[in-house]
Structures are given as C-alpha cells and as structure tokens.
Image (cartoon, rainbow, N blue to C red; front, side, top):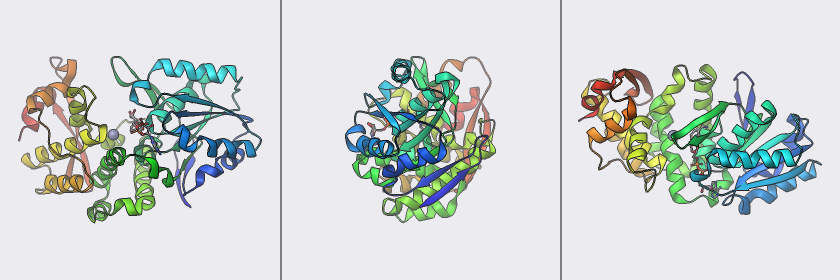
Length: 349
Ligand SMILES: NC(=O)c1ccc[n+]([C@@H]2O[C@H](COP(=O)([O-])OP(=O)(O)OC[C@H]3O[C@@H](n4cnc5c(N)ncnc54)[C@H](O)[C@@H]3O)[C@@H](O)[C@H]2O)c1
Ligand SMILES: [Zn+2]
C-alpha cells in the first residue's frame, strides 16, 4: 500500500493499492459517520466495478443507492447535477452521509460538485478509474461542470475525505485513454522532476504504473498544498494547456482528446521557449520523443495565427496579458506573463 498525505485546509490521504475497491466500505466506516452512500458512476465503468464497491459498502451496513449517468464529457453539465441532486434528495441523504465517485475525471468532477453543494456540502470519496483521474483530477479538490459558454465554468473547491486508487482498474481502460493520461504524466516530469522524466524515457512506465501514479500524485499534492486556490504555483500544472486548449477548441472538442492536445501544446511552447532563450535547447525534441513513445501526437495542422486567436478568445481586442507556463529546462518551470498583443509572435517558430 502506498499512502500520500495531502495537507490542504482539510487534510486527507490518497491510498494506492491493487484491489482497494473491495475495501471501500472499510474506509468509509473508518473516516465518516455515514449510514447512507450514493455511488455516482457512468455507463462504462458501472458494469465493471459497481458491484465490488456496492458489496464492500453493504458489508459495512451502509445503505447504498447507485446513480449512473451516460459516460462522456457531453454529460458534464448542470442537467446531470440536477439528476444527481434528485437521487440524493429522494434517498434522504443527510449532511452526515457520503457520495462515492467511481469513474474518470468527468465522474469525479460532477460527484464532487454535487457533494460540494448538496446541503451546502457533504463528504465524498474519490475512486478514480481512468489514468487521468488517478494522476490528476482526483487530487486537488477542483470540482465542477461545463457550461454552454465553456469548459469547467461552474464549480467549487471541495476536497474529498480520501482518494482510493486501484491501478488494476486501468486494465479495462482503452489504449486511447491510457495515452491521454500519459500526457499529464509527462507534464509532471517536465514541470517538476527531471529524474522522473528520465525514468519515463525508458519507455516502460505502464509496467511500473503504481510507482508512476505515486510520483504524479505526490507532485500534484506538493503544488496544491502550497497553492490550494490557484493564486500562483498551481498554474504550473497548466503546462502545455494554453495551446492545448486552443487545439481542442479549434477541433470543436472532437477527434482529438485532451491529452493529445496537451502533448502538442507542451512541444509547441517548449519550441517557443527555445526561440526566446528561455528554454534549454533540445528540450522540445526530448518532450516530442517522449510523447511519441507513449503514442501521443506532437504536431498540429493549425497555424500559429489560429492557435493564438483561439487562446485569446474574445479577449483579443481587450489588451492585457496571458500567463504562459514555460520550462527553463526539463524539471524546472516558470510562469511568463506575455501581452496578448504579442502572443502570436511569441509562439511562432
Ligand atoms: N478536477 C481537476 O482538477 C481536473 C483535472 C484534469 C481534468 N479534469 C477533468 O477530467 C475530465 C477528463 O477525465 P477523464 O479523461 O477521466 O474522462 P472520463 O471520466 O470521461 O473517462 C474517460 C472514458 O473512460 C471511461 N472509463 C473510465 N475509467 C474506466 C475504466 N477503468 N475502464 C473502462 N472505461 C473507463 C469513461 O467511461 C469515459 O468513457 C474532464 O472533464 C476534465 O475537465 C479535472
Ligand atoms: Zn489536463
């Protein structure tokens, strides 16, 4: 068992162990006074894992109701939250009871948001089942949903009372979503840990995935506990994400996954950094080679003009600055404030 302690306003532990899903009930019993639980999960994850979690909870005499939503980012909206509220209210959940999020980042973000807001806040536990959720979204307490105007626009900071990571669940995750999560794994090496980056370069991260998850959540824990509300350092976690978001936006959020877009975004911003003498020469090539090792793309057909325009959105004419996360070298990152009017020139190589 690997344990990572998170010292945010409300401290909690992340437990990493194969098979831990079957002990979920024991953790709830130990950490919470709950007599009832609502298990929130999606249509892909439920058939694989809901019974194990249900059995474990009922063995501890916890009454459970399951709420299953249609898998996918398209479900991450307020309509689904309303339906979750209905399940919570119909089941007469009290402030002592608990929500269990079993699934990827979409499930964790929504179940967490429901927990943050139902009765002005009840406890929840994260059981992340996608690689992205295990290394990134289940840690840090950001919860929320998308609005028609943009991604993650409504949300709350709400820390779980525990995160239980079962790396065995990755066996049923598709290769595309494994690659997707690997982009965030590579990101952690880039921004904080050159030795970890070198380990990843050996190409066998998936064989040592338990250690990889532990390293990633430890890095995220360190960053988040120093900057819980994203006033500064937490922004470093957005390395590759500014231009990554541009690519996602330009492609209409179809055909390219978040991780694929972030991989390209990391390479592009490293190239720009090299051009401006901010980033050590050769860094972009190393990131690109590593992304290719884990089946991630490194190039885009969109022009620098399109990428800059998409990053600026409707702030194009408003002036102001954009915070770009850059590397000085692998393992060391910084935030560079760049005037929006210079963004296109800045990224063009
Ligand atoms: N809160 C945060 O700090 C944070 C950070 C990064 C990303 N996010 C959010 O996370 C979301 C993306 O997360 P995601 O990639 O996990 O998406 P997701 O939850 O949609 O999961 C990806 C797909 O994999 C399926 N799946 C998950 N686990 C599985 C398993 N073990 N076996 C089989 N199928 C499985 C899901 O049903 C889904 O189809 C986005 O909405 C993003 O905004 C949040
Ligand atoms: Zn991301």
